[in-house]
Length: 515
Image (tube, rainbow, N blue to C red; front, side, top):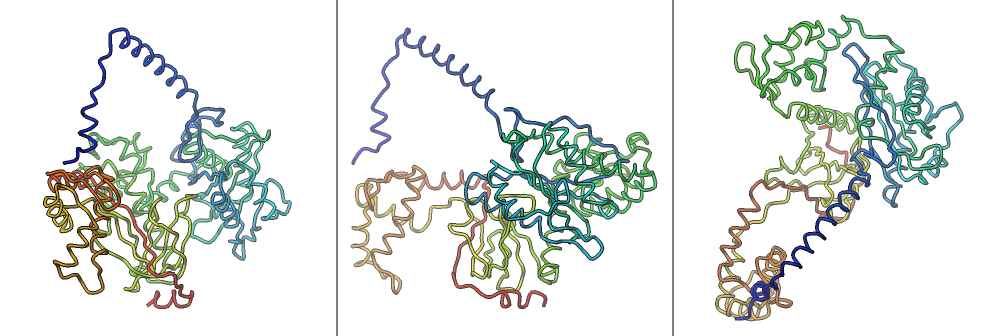
């Protein structure tokens, strides 16, 4: 039998290194380690949201606001302009921010900046595209209906400029298309000197929100005790994270929260009944569990799961409102909850996930007349599915085996000195077995070759040439071991396959969604 590559390499034993060589190797290794450490310290590290740990990143440390301050939600994302697709996203966000989302009372302009000069979107797109990146902010004050959003935004930008110690180029648009008035702000990623504007991660994730809250508080004043109690009472049955959740998370010990150990100071003098109501709501959502009269077991993932539940609720509301569909017919799917399901249907909408500059989503009108929302991953598609096309959505599966094809391959290889030969297999199959109608012997053999190509990439067989593979005697045992290893803690991924490039028109796509 021909020796495997592993057997050949095993015979090439390394030469013995003498003491002088060994000492020199150790000295070189130590020197390289020192150089690597210095280089790693000098390199800037990008955060997922555009902040940089060094290399002149700007920003200051801002103290968290108190419970009586006005709350403002700030979502920030970072959009690179390094390639054509990135520049397309920048144009998309500028156009979206500039859509007229005003109602008859607000009369908001399409886009505005530091002054009242009219902004030309096309020229602003060209201007922003020359920057290495832009920052995209979505600012949503809890008292947005009480604020002059244009004035609030200009004051907010002025504070940012002071913190960053530079003038910035920006545009904004006020949106009133939801129950919560909000502002879309786009900041050009260049400072006053024309250099790349880099912002510290902590300032983006915490500082912006704290500054926005301070400005809203300055304009509207601190919330009164009654306002805070009323606001929290309204939010105890809301999936959005609130101050009560912070108290629960801060004071839980080893996942256990005891109401009797929470003093008035811990609660900022708020009534304990609010905490009880909140815990009962969280229990209904499966996020906490009552252990005794005053004790609760709290999930470590409480904050994250709350965000996921709230986001899912928001997505379904937008789906049902935008396409006039019944909420009961709307569904959010992920690779984790598909569980062997396959969904087929037409693409109703394709867009960018809110708050992201790269991640996209698809809305699918399924064969069962359901409206399905799915967020795409990096390798979900071989080519992008377009609106109107018919697609199949399922989840990837872990490596499995041995399959029936593996049994056939093993039997053939054992009879031929451990070598599988596709040409010989096709020849023998054509004479010895009844192939399915319309399937040729070459096509039948190719199915087995495809399997072996996969196994070769995993190092389970050795590819000799096109259609020829060398198998070990324990071929089936190796596949079983690999399947077990692959199945442990396997994370599935969304897979989208275009079944038809023919597109339906929008009228046909929307038909039946509201029924």
